Image 1 (tube, one colour):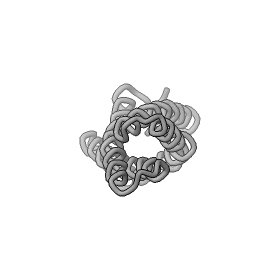
Image 2 (cartoon, rainbow, N blue to C red; image 1 turned 135 degrees about the vertical axis):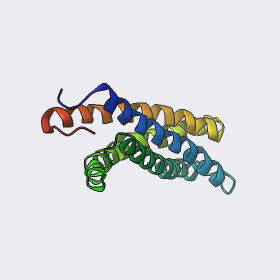
Image 3 (spheres, helix red, strand yellow; image 1 turned 120 degrees about the horizontal axis):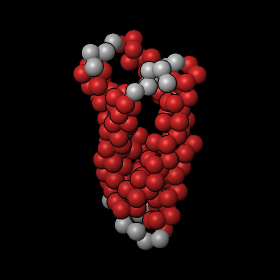
Image 4 (cartoon, rainbow, N blue to C red; image 1 turned 45 degrees about the vertical axis):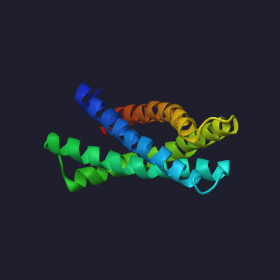
Amino acid sequence: MKGINKRNTLNFNKEIFFGEIGALIGTPSISYLVSLFTSAVKYISFAAVVGGLMGQAVFWMYMRIYDKKVDKNMSVKGLAEDIIYFTPVAFLIAILVYYPTLFFASEYLLNDQYKVVWAVISSQILAFSFFLILINIYRYFLAKYYGKVL
């Protein structure tokens, strides 16, 4: 397929994994912080979503810029175009699949008496697996039908 190669596929997934590292830092940190003030499961689960979103966005953006600079392909226009193609679909997948999975799985595990950090990390691994599969399917079809490689 035109444009998709091993290097840019590796970079694309590395950026997403790096974003998930940010989410892995943000999700349990914010959840734990909230759990110090309340034992309400719905607030702790909501904090998991907020913490994950903040950490993921910051770490993904950093790695995307880094990869573009290493490839000597960094331009504000190119980065903006990548964000325009990536962000709405990533956000949609996150809203429809990732965060509901994170919320309901963590709520389930918390109600089953799992500790906060382990419940949200386990839920996050499941949610991220779904996200990674779906975003790579989108990337494939975007390249195949529109010639745009993320």
